[in-house]
Length: 372
Image (cartoon, rainbow, N blue to C red; front, side):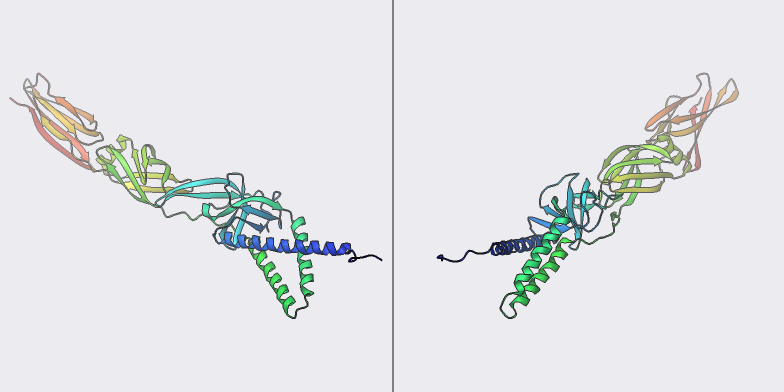
């Protein structure tokens, strides 16, 4: 005969251990569920969990594996968890980041791709990324553990001798499980194309002082690179500033457009923050003024005030020893410069007739260069 209480069977300690484990597990589930729900809606959180239901990340992450993500920084190569909506979330690897210069300041987009996918996803804003995946719990581990501990919790709940209490506990656990599935299982969604902001050419005009073409456009994105062709001839891009492109076309093209009146065809292609393209064609008329003519000291001075060259045909009629003679020449006067036409020294009289074209119209003027 012995004093004291009889020793407790080993099954008692095992049941207590399972009870404590189930309580800790349910508390952890509540905490993970809370943070997961907060993270999906953009509220402050520390970490979260999600169940992967697709094979886009195989073999690193398989369907029904659980990922645990933390609110921490990430870089290219990391696996992240991002949500387009609270119920549409994706677990993919970061392959690139894009910085956009918008009217509201710089914005960062994240480009992701599944390891088992052929194409990258549409870029998403940085604030849509909820965290970096720090742990992958295999499905062979978390699913059996969940089933065993939940079954034990339900078994203990139905034994509660209080009328109605066991039903409340069972109902609460069931609701908790349903909410956990909602919070951790992302929905499969089809990739959608990136919405490209509206970008339109606003106009192209000739800067007659610098002899350049100025191209303007409207939109939220800023040009990174651009190429311009005028009448299929590449033009030198001098500067890209904000929403303005300044380019230097071949001056001979400007001359031809001025003389014939035919518009220049300007083709513009530009890369907008690496996510979109500006592409368009414009027809531009080139204006200008007539050359200025004056005589000084038996010399005709042809001044071209335009920034581009202008061609003039010069016919000189002069008298020598009682006979009249003609000489003809075509002179190309460069922009903002002048050319000289002199009468022959032995000419007794000389008259000049100058012809040029402006917008397809042939114009002329005659002046005496040398008289008796």
